[in-house]
Length: 328
Ligand code: UDP
Image 1 (spheres, rainbow, N blue to C red):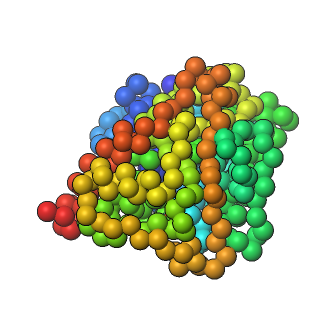
Image 2 (cartoon, helix red, strand yellow):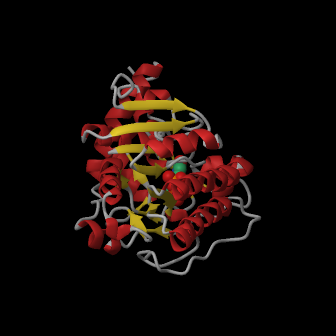
């Protein structure tokens, strides 16, 4: 196959490209390097079946041309990370809605298989133990900027299913849960690289709120394996699928696990959300996927073995800190 990956130089995208190339697929990436980087795919650039095009997703003629050459499209390009969403709400909304619409239109016009990345953020304030794709979605008011991200991803989902309904677009919507692995950076909010970095540097680990909020973390290797299989899974067309692991962790337990795994002397410090994100911030107490739909489609779902996930992240962060000259 020839796969067109938007946002392919980002964290999940670069892992997806690597796995696709390893399976012998040709890969074209379009990325504006806003949160992604050339470094993420540096090892793939010399490979003749891989192509990185640095351009913005708003370049519709380029999108059309790359879609026309592809057998399948995976649309990952988005403004991501809680911190970025809070700091840069206009860019978040515009990128997440306009670029997705452009990709969907091109795929409709050219009749291409497409996977659209959405997010577990759409589950918003829901309080179920395990979220199902058919659950009602409750998000907070627009005065809290965080919800703009969920709303933008939800518009993407509605658009994708509308194109499927009206134009038989062969689309699948992926609701990605917290995904973790080497190469992820903490500047946009992601908790695990932040904790690992601080633990390795012996700095205080800052847990927001009471730390009893819970998440399911999934290794990126498992997530990209699921994405590659879903491309070829015709039964997933026209559906929304949770992609995530099967075990939850509180952020307090995560902080302790990171300290243990890094043998760090860091202390855990609890700080109020307002201090971390400003006044109107609202966090989810719990966010875990029901993975039945994924299991029914693929015959398996990712595991959430925290130690297996943390190992490669710690190794990678150690290397990065040494390169930065802040760790000996
Ligand atoms: N978090 C934290 N300290 C940090 C970064 C995040 O305690 O330095 C918490 C955050 O409030 C949330 C959880 O860790 O409850 C996961 O945060 P992340 O931004 O990784 O993903 P989210 O699930 O919020 O999208």
